[in-house]
Length: 379
Ligand SMILES: [Zn+2]
Image (tube, rainbow, N blue to C red):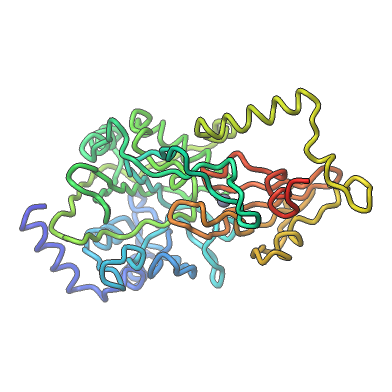
């Protein structure tokens, strides 16, 4: 970063309240009645730190949001990145906590180019918490992608697309491992239910398909994801860029089909093995019995099974002809950074077996069978 730019940022910081949420709200007020069509009202939310789950949803124009993104922020606890203030692309009604199901809509497209991929650590498997036996799940580590994406090439593509955006390098970026975030405001909010597919469509429309290799896809697909505001152990190393086009209008009337889960090779292997078992006629469920009789899986209450083992489960919400609940994942300790969020989903639909899945990539292959084996063991 050049020295004049740094001074400019410091100047803006002095004028502010020091609270990004307060600033966006205060500055939005006088202008709300005289918005031009070129300055749609953007909505997003702010958080004090990574564990803060009470969103402060704010509305304002891109011109009001940009100065907030131009400042330098410090962690609440020195040196601890997770105590940095953060922005999230979704906005919420008052009084709810952060989570996919509670969000009202998504107002920003957040791209996290961490230029990393998960690599299996040879010979290291997670252990079953109950039995201490090794599971089929290998421990992984994040390594740099072979061909990292640069901020310059992404911003050149966005410039070419003619849209407004802001980019900054992240806390853990280094000269030999470029990591950066790009924020692209959306002219109209996207409903949360369609976000996963809408965000994929947005990448294609913006000409960003060639840069998928550097992108953290789970962050892209998660409307409740957090992005720490610009900060660094050495603030002088923060690099920034922006494009000054129009506010991006995503026409999402023709969404692509639902995405297949993005499985790592070891996960695809587990799936193939299970498919082979089914083909042979092996039925994993038939080994479970209650009083000598087969378990009635259709009337199985997954929420009680989890709650009885101390796992937090959210309230049921109507979903198709049944219900859906968010829950914590029983294997949250295996998530990247050990994140214990409401990443698991329990779905109960009349006349079918209930389903379980976890949104974290390392658990994308897991389902009802894994949950039952965790709760009841393998017979
Ligand atoms: Zn999980």
